Length: 221
Image 1 (cartoon, helix red, strand yellow):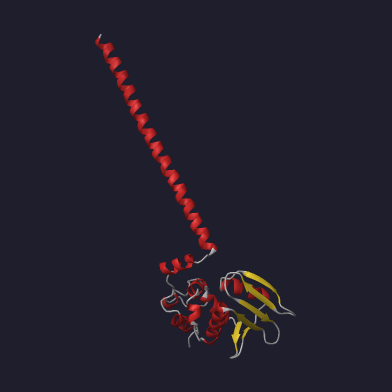
Image 2 (spheres, helix red, strand yellow):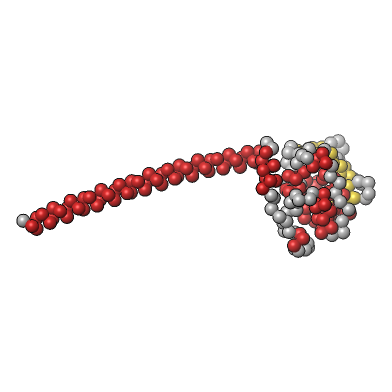
């Protein structure tokens, strides 16, 4: 059982998405029966507020929620090609759209079919070989084996993220440049203070020598 990932999405930002999603959180919602898959559709069986937290926190999304007619609720992400619509009622259907939405759908189908977290984790890893996928957020009632531990995002993955016009990367780079400027200013001030201290020490020593010579001359007379 593996996640079906299209090569088209793989060439975009699949690695960025998967390195920030909370896979243990996804599995936790499966265990609590918030999400379900009956072979045809994904369903959400908790309330609207819980669904908002699930999409925004577990999948690290930002965007807007709105009514989509009747009791249905729709979310449109502002940072990824993802939208979803929930139809609360008898079926509680949860539909996803967009390239990232298709991946979310595949992930949820996979977790619903998994019999354990390790099975779920391995299924995702098959899809994204050599890409750090799972994070190490603490969960209740889950094993803490080496298989559930995750590696840090690789340098190449970080570089790929920062090559894109991400607001987060722009802010980080800006903060880093400001830190470099402030550090250079501090170094300049330290050098200036050191030079001043050396100059004052030399002047102090010269004054002492002159005073000592005058005292010796007085004793000699």
